[in-house]
Length: 310
Length: 296
Image 1 (cartoon, rainbow over the protein chains, first blue to last red):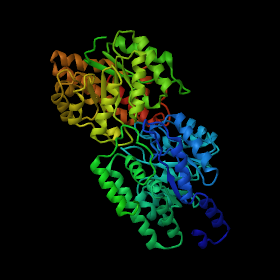
Image 2 (spheres, rainbow over the protein chains, first blue to last red):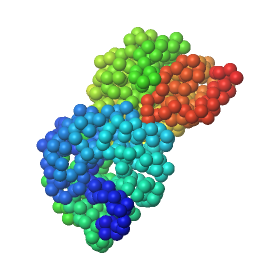
Image 3 (cartoon, chains in turn red, orange):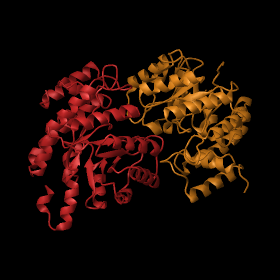
Image 4 (cartoon, rainbow over the protein chains, first blue to last red):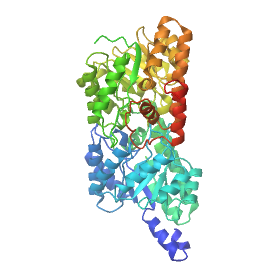
């Protein structure tokens, strides 16, 4: 990795900070029973499966984990289980971002009391479309309420807020904001990395940009398909570190094909159905998300076969 | 209470104290004020009421206070929408237990359900309650749009009473009216289009601006009923000035600032929504002055 190119004391310190958060993070699906309740056994199995597959970090109660459907009590239960089962083998970063600063602070404190290693905080989505000053104050307030590292997560959807590069410079000045996740595009990711201090870590969100993200200086990535094919994601990262671009691109191509199949249904139901086909049932997605149509289920099976998942 | 869903419905702001807690006396005062002004329907815990910022307990308290204060004088339409069907049903049942007269639910947001999922979402809520149910379409905010075809299907459900639409698309609103059963209540949610909404068949206007300027909003409706288009246009143009000014800050901070300026403060909006900039506040004051609401 980058440590091979390190020259001098300062750069070594920077690289050390970055190493801590390097690699592939799995945004964990949340398993439900057929009745839609939290499936604690399946969550335990998933935690072990991902770590045993070589995943470097876990991210429960994220978008892929349908966090928007979880009550505060359910979120807490998910964190307790994942932290207990992980048993400090890899860092656990909890998703605690919701629409208001007040509730985000509350959830962050809850996550801290469960023993997570950090929190990832999505931009407040929907009605409050805050400006840069409001967003800065939001993250500064959350960061001041916890000792944990706080990672903002840029996820501009439906005309919602987008973290500007100017704002990244300001956020990076908060002592316990060591990095962020970008969920939009490569050009913006590059601008974040260019503008932030050298020790600020940036993770790439969209699955299709996992490899390109590493190439432009992300320390890691958070592909949703890591739930389904963690070994492919880990292989991509190892190939990148080893400088084997052809092998990394091959893994990326598989990831991209799988990611594109997720549009056969409403996110993230396709991922759950694919995991079931692979023998790792995670139950249904919570409504309004509905199961796949029979026709699309057939298409999904064909894609899984073509990519070697089945 | 017999509901006709006609007239002006006010999506009430939720007053907070400076610490950001629910201001219960402020909410009672606002309820009485709006009823005294002649508003036909109240709609607490909607988007204007920062419903997304309320915990379950706070939402319950808001509904209890408004229902108790209204005391049957006007019907109370409760905002009960959430992203998941599960939580939407929970909140709707809670509103029913509190004694609300109807429930208004924003479409799911953040995720993008398809047409069948949207249909099933609202159908499942309607099955879970006896209350009249109103889906709320606001694609500009949610990224999720209800088509005329889905609304037509939904209108076949017995307690699907109508729809609130803030798309700003008058032809879509007209389709809602044409493709649904007679009596299906189509409500215009875009303040600058109340008069156009009424003339294409809306029975109600859902007026965030009525928290600040109830009189011109009522005047649009009265003039419409009287067939006086000039009076209706005049009142509509006043309301439109305030609606445009709402973009001077993050929603709904401007409504709360304007209420403070007209002498009926409702406290701050909840963070991350911040206060207005001095420049924005000045522009808002000029807008209110130009409308004749504040003296120069």
